[in-house]
Length: 107
Image (cartoon, rainbow, N blue to C red; front, side, top):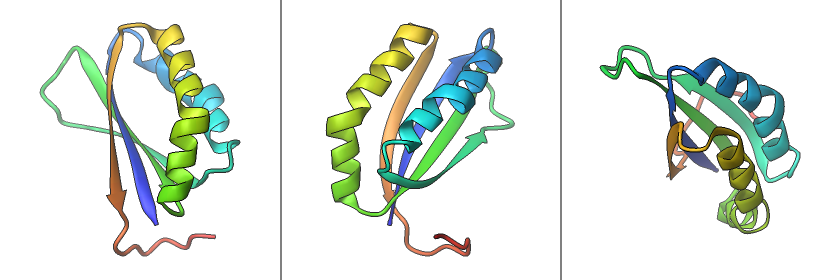
């Protein structure tokens, strides 16, 4: 299994609206693609940047084939919607990690 990690640095002025939109709209749209098994939203605490909040959204994906399919078929449109909604009020970077071991029960 893999983790598709999306780290987003969001302007402090909009972070509550951004988080609400992520929970109510964007993440459900990502999950309905059927490419991911689960997700987790985390917020970085204790960082030194007072003008932003930093979030990590981690999507668990079965294999690279599912991730590539997501990136090719669904990702561009969903990322475009995010850009249209929040413009230049955020920065994002994406990484892929191999899950070596975990103690969560996954279906």
